[in-house]
Length: 452
Image 1: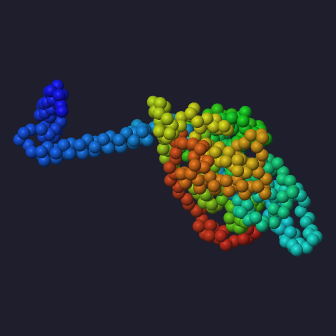
Image 2 (image 1 turned 30 degrees about the vertical axis):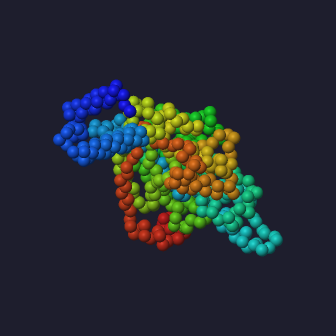
Image 3 (image 1 turned 180 degrees about the vertical axis):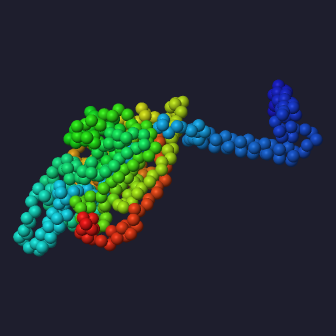
């Protein structure tokens, strides 16, 4: 039984609630009370009000979750950036021809070794006249040949006991003459084009880069191995390695490359005579170490390649540094230091991640990967492992749900300030008839015609 005091309190609360509903400006609340309204009407309005509150609560929760996941808003700047305030991109050019016959006749030596090996197959006495030095050179050159690694029955694996020469020094020695590759290099903003050229060690072998930062600016010298250089000055006296600045703007840059058909040898025996004569071209930021396995443009012989660039600049306000990198989905330069590279960007981070993953999986790394003095380069018989490691890491990148995702643990988010280039490519054959004819001519016929 309620006491008189409690009964009076209930009456006061009820009267107060009725007064609030009658005078409230909240839509629908005044219909909760009133003697002229039936209980059914009041119940309906109460139900509608509760459902409205629930709906508003759900929308507020969704808005909060969206802000919590992506608190950064990407907007397009309406103020154009002058092109002269931007660094001109780097251009890396890799010849598909890896060896000059005048330096080492790979084709002749390989065919002779192959013939002698299979002629003596099934016998106890094989006559191999090819020296161990030449076999070692063949193995060094075949580091370029990914197809050989897949075939476990390749006869070259019978010579695993033969030592290889100093790999990088030998590959640089037999590569195309750097000054002969480009017969002309010019730009409309700076005539000293060769001052911006470097010899670059990539996963495609020996390449040539235009307008890229020097090795001292790219890597931490106290961590990197000191056996060879990844970025080498164009001139051997080192006059161009410390330029101190990048080319700001070049309205047009022209390269003229020669084909070296007369003295060329395909590095990989699986290549036909009509393949491996062009170039692979990569356009990237000057601070990005080139990796041509991700993307590249192929330039065939007897063709002119015209590339128009449209830069897309991503800038992040410094005020966003108070948010975590996972929320803003990018890293400022100081937030995610890399072991080998001085400057953070997503490409350098993924290359370092691939290097660490390859070392953990194979116990060695590809010769183009950054490494310490204590890390060894994979030998010819081990090269299948870095090749497989790259594929495994790429596949995991597409399925980033597993807890063992190595690339996910590397946390290679984009840089908060970066430039990407949209390319508009135009290719034009010098002479279509010549292009068609080269597809049906043998290498000897083509060489004979060029010497006429």
